[in-house]
Image (cartoon, rainbow, N blue to C red):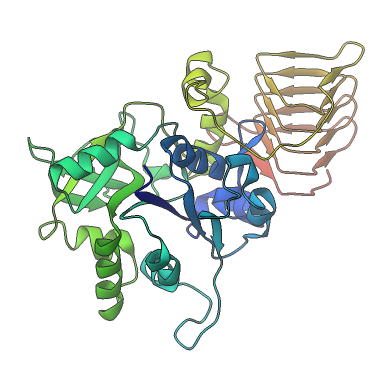
Length: 373
């Protein structure tokens, strides 16, 4: 795949993610005990053999830049090509705030034109899966398509989690004949995975044409508007897909990792997921401390009971504390004899002694980064 490069747009974030994206982009949201959502996109590209990757940032990208650094963990610190972070900047034509995806792509056109590869894999940052794009690119070339869209079949539809819901209607030959964006009643179960393959020259033309007509959204102003004019085809992905588009979906997909079948598929040994390495001591269980059916990252100190939960690095659960059905991010501190159930605690949250905090499976409660209770 030396003839393809990757481009990841990290600007959009669902308002339904609330406090999770208050101080970070959706690409930097922690997931699965030790990862960020961006880790999956980068790992998919690297496992494909793509080593020229651009990250389009817009707002709240300091956490993302701190996580990525030079791209060493993904083998993207290279003399030729490698990892390029493309934050907004002010010019005569650009105010530094993107009006939409098209505007963001146009501002990075210098990087796109300098890339020597013929094909581009354009991706969003809120859809998690584990795959490679080799077969998708091969199909794209063989079919002569202008654009190929990765999709999977969605069985359970939840209107409350709708965000960038792109539905594809295809004929028997696999050509997309209709596209619906955030439909109230979807006519098809084929849902875009927010990954597109096309020639670089086609992307340049579509972006410049849309911008010249004051159209700024790639999905609605380029794909939906040109579905009859372009040869758009679908490529089906049959593996596990996690769309991080609401608090409920974030909670649901983290909890799904406690299912061995899901975790084995998402963290395949054949296609490893890489992340920034942090040197921590192994998790310690002190006294009566124990964890049941949980993900416990290194650096944690468990003196109480943890059940059906996901704990990131450096979490401390004091004696007598009980944590159930919850997600605790880095450096959270749970006081003695406190009880947590169906909670999401962002980084650095401190819960005092004998506190009782509870949400519900359909509505987990989140505490913002650095909260003291």
